[in-house]
Image 1: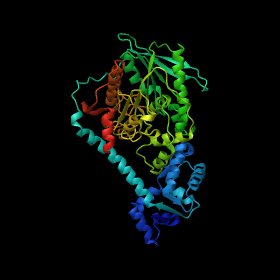
Image 2: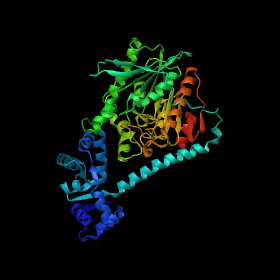
Image 3: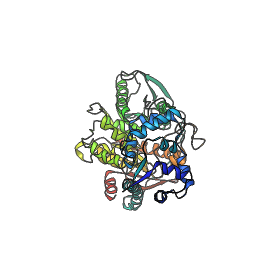
Image 4: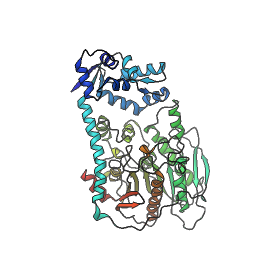
Length: 490
């Protein structure tokens, strides 16, 4: 079922013209515009506030894919490609600093828009289904009382450990025009010699300063840590996007990120980085967690394009990482055989569940410790962390840490966050995005990651427990058996 709406009649009606077509008012009422004032406000709200940034987003792979999917739901006469909308918007951006929906509709060469009601209903049902899965996951966890065991009281790590410092190292690499900047955190005392060292990678738009809190805690507990920035997909790249100088970075940065990882491992092996431990744990946030999984040797199967067609058709905003995953259809990744001396992968708000079928034919026997939150709509835990562990890891030591109320951005520590909630940073996000108290979440993450690494060196697994609490935080540590049970119930 499709609703045809004349653009001229739409604009005239919102401006107070006589109703010549009562059908139009009925359709608008169905769409939620019960009075002209509401429609006029909607049409005159800026669709684009920053034309430079808007251009870069529209020209990116993700921006074009979203436009393509919206064009399937809102057709412009016979134009089903969205080209007329894009061309018109580009022309308007050349003339105006701000573009409203009214400007766009008034400038289109087409006479009518056609709203695909069936398509919108399907999209709404998909969104509802995804949100219901998240809610059901929490209720299912609460009901698994028989798997809950009492743990010793958790003493959180101090948020500020000041005695451990780092050394800045600049590493020249052949695949980039600029050097890689690294922080090398060596423990100031060696009470316990660790078997592993840690390579920590930020996510898309992030930088090493966001994770000093974790590097400091790990180093304070005896692990050497290297934290690196990825030029082209770091905070400088995000700042360039906001200023309209560079396009929105996407999955095309992954090959360079894998090469960055290899360069650091090679430099350590050649003695250019002063770390004595032999084995490595790869650790990262979001895209920084996907990078080591892709580098570990697990192969993306040949059904990715089929899965992505369904994902993109659903236009789901409850898993934004799906866009990055599906972009990998068009990207050639370097051939991988694995990483020498790799002990484990730790991924905060990791993703990649669309890239692999859930079977044992294409899995790695490498321990994974994946963390996520129930307030994460970028990499939702039910499809990403839980689904990812089932898809890629066959190790008995693998676990998922799920924190209720934590979001995709909870692990990111920004300047001033100790003194005020939001802090000062490009990631200056309010509670509606960050979720429940990020400092408490970060302290819990540090404690549980260290517990996992301790057990890893003893070749033991951390206990699987549900319905754990510390202060006002509720969290769960899940093994493969519990995860399979939870996923099956969805």
